[in-house]
Amino acid sequence: MASLNVGNLGEYLREQRRTAQLSLRQLADAAGVSNPYLSQIERGLRKPSAEVLQQVAKALRISAETLYVRAGILDAERDRDEVETRAVILADPTLNERQKQVLLQIYESFRKENGFEVAPADETAPGVGAPGTGIPGAQDVPDTQPSQDTAVRGPRTADGSDAGPQQTAS
Image (cartoon, rainbow, N blue to C red; front, side, top):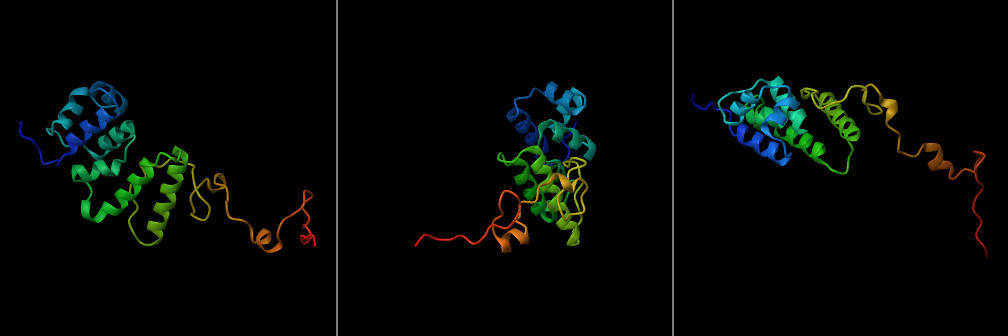
């Protein structure tokens, strides 16, 4: 069977699978696809659907959009900035999974607000949101900005009343 024009998708998947230290069978099981089918994808003999790529991406814990571009489903030039931004967020080891999902949802909401098409929400967790984005679950994200009252009035005492002006020793 001749190799289809799927770019370097198969090579990339094999590299990601090996990096994750998964056998072909383990990845196939985790992604919910057959072992022979996944092998054919890695060898460039099959062009998987977006749904299969999404399942494989979740099993590998990588960006589905990156796989979409490599498979030719997304236009690489037009979508490169969004894909790279999402990939960087997802790869950041200093953020936990919930923080990554919230950050991705904020990013998508700003893109939508600015008239850009929002990518499929395959990487986002339902019920997670951020303040002011119109995303459900906004109350889950603490507001880290000081309130205007605190900034203007200054510190408060333990009982919640305003602390008086600090006096300096003279």
